[in-house]
Amino acid sequence: MKRAATLSALVCLLAVTAAAPAAPAAPSSHDEARRPDGRQATYGTLLDSVPKKGVLKVCTTGDYAPFTKLDPADGTYSGIDIDMARDLAKSLDAKPKFVATTWANLTKDVASGRCDIGVGGVSITLPRARQVYFGEPTREDGKTPVVRCADKGKFGAGALADIDKPGTTVIVNPGGTNEEFARAHIKKATIKLHPENTTIFQEIIDGRADVMMTDASETLYQSKIHPELCSLHPDKPFTFSEKAYATPRGDDEFKEYVDQFVHLAKHDGTYAKYEAEWMK
Image 1: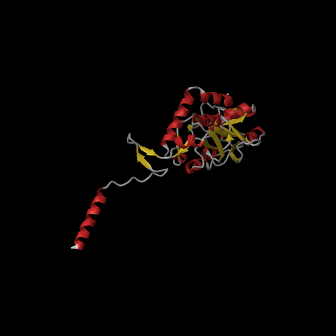
Image 2: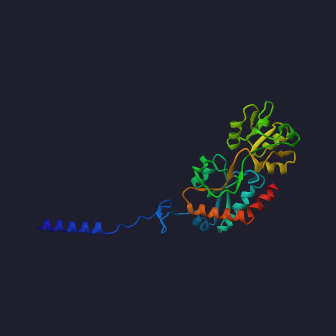
Image 3: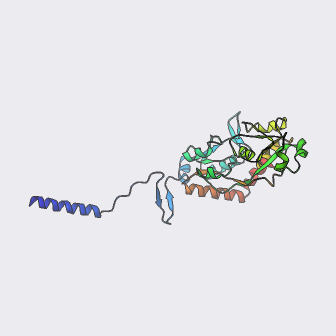
């Protein structure tokens, strides 16, 4: 009898427990949940944490003027995207903290959380887009040649056929889209690798190379600071590409905010003003 009463009490307890609603687990910083509008929401968005900390961590290479340039003398950064990053930080009630990176590691550093955003003339590519979000493009771009102005006549209209000839030396920086383009299209001319982005154009000026094919924006800037250099057809580049800022995958709220920031800067004259200071 006593055993039967015990079993009956246990059954009742299990029934009550099963009927009780389970307590929700506290979400981690990367857990997803449904927002009232039905969309997925990510907890721990940078849109909230950056203002709270007062710091926006900005990854940049510092070797790609006019977008990002590091002054080795005092460690300060300048450039179109550096000015934009400062404005973005200010809009978030924060200060920018520039984090040195390389082209090989920039998107990895954003994806790993080493920084909150990657800037500095970053071209959108599909392999990079597998690691990070790219927002609204800041500008269109594409590969175009830059040569010594004294040799401009040697290259005719600046078509690939005018460049890819025996006796011509095409110089590129290794590991990026410039080398990728050169190796895909240069078959007869000599390809010369030069590891330093900051000194590569001096190689052309000094006659150790004849041509570099890089983004039209960079050729315009280099021809501005080096009158010996001429950009060929920068308004009609060989390729199409877009530049944008890289943000962490999964943080939709922060990406949407950066998109709005870029959209407004492109339409209120802010981006055009920074660009004109460097390229016109």
